[in-house]
Structure formats: structure tokens, C-alpha cells
Length: 115
Image 1 (cartoon, one colour):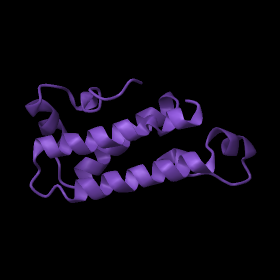
Image 2 (tube, helix red, strand yellow; image 1 turned 90 degrees about the vertical axis):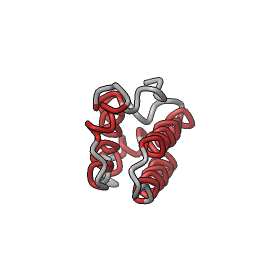
Image 3 (cartoon, helix red, strand yellow; image 1 turned 30 degrees about the vertical axis):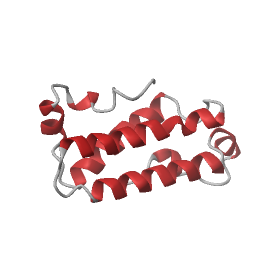
Image 4 (cartoon, rainbow, N blue to C red; image 1 turned 135 degrees about the vertical axis):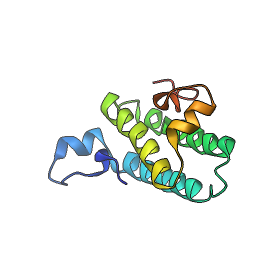
């Protein structure tokens, strides 16, 4: 899966300013690491799943390395959707995972995000 922020036509100069290559490269690396982490979660241990979520959410501080201007509400919502879909694609039942922690599906990133 790819975040929409990563899909752009090079002729869109304003996007180059909003989403510099360094931001996209750091984001791609964080997403690849998350997918690798999730792939390794064959035993579906809840704590390990939440640790993988935490690592990705905290690495979203990539945004701060770019003066806080890279990711706005839409991109943050896409990141949450990406996390949910990636987990589901790897056989992790996100609603059940959240329920075991006493939270809703939409709250699985809330412990670590300040956005």
C-alpha cells in the first residue's frame, strides 16, 4: 500500500515544496519498516502489534524534521487508514485487537500521537 502523498507528478512544483524528496524518502522507509514489522508478527501477539504501531506513529515525527509542514490532517488520516489496512492484510483483526485493549478501532494510534 502507498500513501497518496507519495503519488505525484514531478511537474507539480508546489507538491515538491510541500512534500520534499527527503520527507518522502523518510516516509517510505518508515512504511517499509512497519510492513516488515507486521509481516514478522505471525503469532499475533497484541503487545508486539502495538509496538509496531507505536514505532510508525512516533517515526511520523519525520514531519517535525520538515518544519511541521509535511503532513496535515488528510495525510495523518491516510496514515491511520494505512496502519489499519496493513494490519488487516496481514491477518490481524483490528476491531478485535482494539476491543481487547478496551478501545475502538479508530483509537489504536492515539496513545502515541500528538496530532
